[in-house]
Image (cartoon, rainbow, N blue to C red; front, side, top):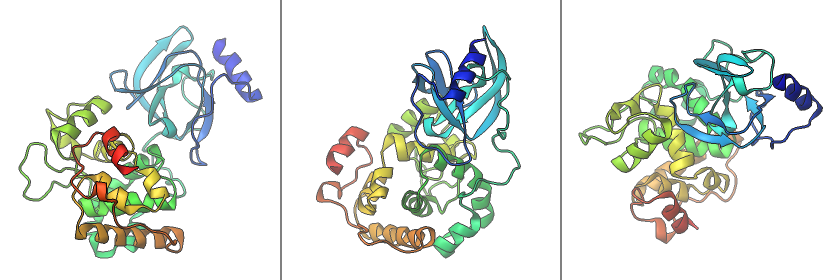
Length: 309
C-alpha cells in the first residue's frame, strides 16, 4: 500500500526528498520510499555502499539491471535501478511502484540503440586520429566508458573533451592496457592507468572488490571504466577544472610532473573541443600553477584541492 501511495504522491509532485542532480534526457524519474535506502556500486547486496538516502527521494533512472533478490514487507524484487547522478544502483523493492520491475526502462547493457550523445568509435577517431591504435578494442570498451561518463556527470563538451583527451594519452582509450615495461604489482592499468597501492586500495574499497589482491581487475572490461570514473570524481574532483577549460589543473590532477606532456595533452583537449563543441573557445589554460608542477600522485584529494586553489 505504501508503494502505491508514494507513487500517487510522486505523480502530484509531492515528495519529501530533493530531486537528484540533473541526468540525461533519456532517464526516467521514479520515487524511492523509506529511510536508509542504500545506493550500491553494483546490483548486489554485497557491493559497496556509495550513498545512503535519508528519506523518500526522486531518482532519475537510465536503465535497470538483474541482480540480488531483496525483500521487504511490500514485496520482492531482483531488479536494481541504475541512477547515474548517484553513481550506483537502488533495489527496485524500495521504488514506489506496484511492479517488481521498472516499467518502460531498458535493461542495462541491452541491445537497444545507444543514448543520444554517447561517444562512438568514429567520434574518437575524428578527435584523436592515429592515437586510436586498436579500433576494435576501443569499440569494445565504449559502452562501459559511456556508462562511466554518465555516472560521473561527464556530460558536456568541455568535460568529455578533458576526460577523453586524458584517457587517450593514458591508455589510447584501451580498457585492457598495461603500462609497457611496468612490472610493479600496482603499476599502471586500464583506462586511467591506475597506479600505486594508495589508489588500488581506495578504489577497490569503493567498489567492494579486492584490487590489492587482484590488481588485474583494473584492466578488465567490467572495472576499467568505473575505476576511471572513480579517479575523476572521487579520488579527484576534475569536472570543475574542465568546466573552466583549465587543462593545466586537469593534468596536475592525473598525477605526473609538469613537462612537455602537458602541452601534448592540451593539444588533444583542443582537438576534442573543436570536434565536440564546434570550435575551440577562448581561454583554454594549458599551464599549471607553480604549486602543481611536481608529482601530485600521492596527494589526498583534500591536499590536492588545497594546492589547486
